[in-house]
Length: 395
Image (cartoon, rainbow, N blue to C red):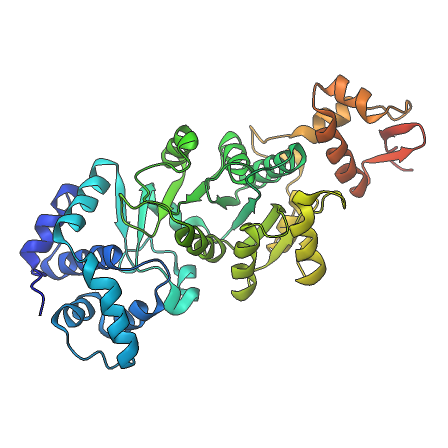
């Protein structure tokens, strides 16, 4: 039997850096959750069954004491203890809680009113708790939300589409959820912040530090104006497994998932798979048929029934929102986006090629070509042998 102090006094001492007074039983339960976060990897359904059957305190006591875990097979119980007990350290738990307090990271559990109940759809694979940097009350405002994910090595086209979608949706009150990575994730977060909307970054490592390091300022901005969330304790490093498991949280926390750009084996397809498993609406943005960075989105549309997304209105439809915000009544500061710049560089009378339109708009030509394709799908522009022009209202 391993000695480990789960008393109310031990719990209160460990939780004291947060500066919050908990009653004895609540302190023990929070402390037990923090301990479990040190013991297990994200998505450990075996631990989830123990905690679901006994609660975090009794489950931890049974594991530490070597008691019979009747909810598990002997093999599961034995292998579980071999995974968990080598990580058991009161000092490591105290350090993570102290780091959380120093960095303004709050431990949110199912006992808290802010807990996002949509995560419970993950069943035994649901997170035990969340480490949240920012205004935790915003977790309750994610029922109208969309995950915008995609390639880290995004093209100009993918970057543009992610920014345009995120900005318009965020300005209209729809939260933008993503993973804080380079490429599509970063573009979506920045555009949502620029539009004055809510954005949430789910990290594979601890919420106390940015990953990638090059996004330190972005993650800090998100924490100030939105939420930075992780299911692993502060001080935890991101690993390949944690990235994959993080993707299930992105899909579960959001009301719908849109993949903007993804290669054939992109990790974004993993997020899309979780969304499909959870029966969450799934959308994908089409790209050029010759583009390797859009091979994954085309695959989602062709093989997995993802809805074709060409505008923010398509995303609203994916979310079941039929009412579309009129530009005249849009909130002040609404992001107009690059399509406006492109249309401003065009005429209803004069045909112009994409290079000329790009020069007039002050934009990269490949970005403009992608925008023109989307505008043509919307009927806003028309193309011909001489180039492009604005569509005439009324035909």
